[in-house]
Length: 240
Image (tube, rainbow, N blue to C red; front, top):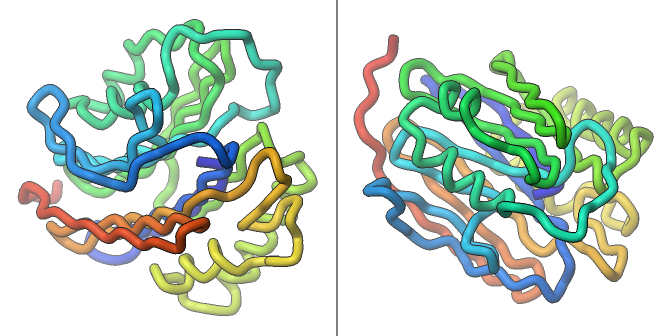
């Protein structure tokens, strides 16, 4: 949930890849299918019942990063988990309307990256800074995010440069992005794409790739090296 890349591919398709940086003792379940409010979902579940990355048959992928634009001081408790917010966004019929009306007060700051293809493919970014929502539609371009809670401005800029170097040197595709998320600056345990500061480290890498009406999720637990791959078919969408 702390490093995310997204790229558009062709024919309304895309690849989204995320590294989850978390306390090693925080338990999560491998991706599985769930039904919430009659909506079929696929996601790895965290201990609160939510997720940091999920696919919805509402033709949407939702991915959460901790923190807004800048690092924040944590409160002792919050009203709702950010992972549950992700679930709510996945089951929404109209994501823009849902976000506009959603009560985020007393929820810890976060950034959400959304791919939605109910008509043509759209990328969205929602930043909740603890006071205000900042919701925009993004251009369909390659992009990287690094969580403000773990990575300083300087670290984020350097990681951005690594990503731009990758774009310059190779055709971006699922394999290239998986390699980027797995091997970039492996000796840099502080802010390499796979990081390990002891109390927090990269626990898993999840990649979602949409190809037509099929979408798949690849989840790798970096401790066990177990790889889980699951797919499901999506409803037919007529492009606008």
